[in-house]
Figure: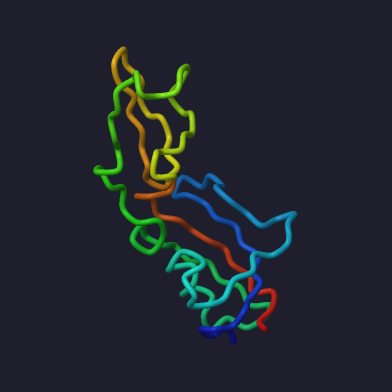
Amino acid sequence: MAQDGDRVAVHYKGTLDDGSLFDSSEGREPLQFTVGAGQVIPGFDAAVRDLEPGGSKTVRLEAEQAYGPKREELVIEVPLDGAPPGLQVGDRVELMNGAPAQVVAVTKGTVTVDANHPLSGQALTFEITLVSVS
């Protein structure tokens, strides 16, 4: 069984509440991480504990167990003259502190960016199969 400190390999499929797929290991190598080391979101880590190789489970994680709630203080409005030219809604940018963000609005004088993780504030469902434990 997988326990804290074990190196595991898992296959997974992640979906949103509307059923849309946001990530999957299908067609790729299994995801490898150390259980309990904080390398994956907390709920995913917890879901793998006590699985045996070949075992599977489906878990639904509330936002707090996944990428956290959407934080309004991470939605930032900046002057357009300090932004790269040609920005459009949906563009991904890097903030001065190196954090990734997405452009959510562009007006004549400002650009609004959201530095929340794209999956923050959302419940996530994972189908997880433990491939190996070492």
